[in-house]
Image 1 (cartoon, one colour):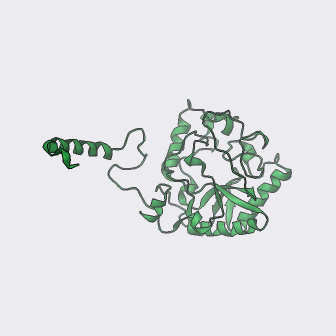
Image 2 (cartoon, one colour):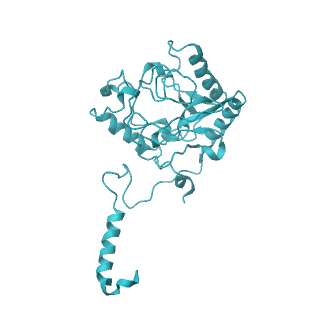
Image 3 (cartoon, one colour):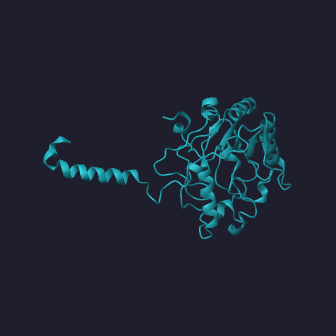
Length: 275
């Protein structure tokens, strides 16, 4: 670094220019809602990483990957990490213990969701040209109706920290193969052997399936699929979780610690530790 002393003045000018460029966020990757020059918001002390409460619960955090209804990683998900309010995480741990005794495990797809991620969903839903994942996640729904039909909204209970999306896996758990962007998509309501492979027991549809078959008590769901949905619901209801009737995978722990607050800290360890 000291070998170029004769060019010190020019070097200083160049370095200052480079620092200015590095400090400025790229417009293509700027985080919506983040203010230039301000540090990222941190999680309140009541939030925890689920893995610190129960490392046995399987985590397959879909929104850090392109395998979701948008088709790309979602804003605000910096790490594949389930974050919840501490009471919700501890209640989930109790539900997990009851399922482990029966030879099953919980698997979470999404937990706390920052507001910037919800904003990403809203921008995507407004772009009617982008239907790259339609054949899997919403084959029978016109994208122009996603707001009207309630599949997309400007606020989500996930942003309050006590809501999560999850399923049940039979043990020993087999791995779920990675999604390959561009691969042929299969409808999320197809028979289990035909839709995208998931190590979840058969719930009748895949996760985030925008279809009425995803309604927890849809009368067309019977047999083992009904029993599996009831297995998940009963295990969670015993610990204070309430199901959203339109989504078999969606549960909220009650009472919520933050029933009226929608947080926007990123999904990362740093949001919890400040380091």
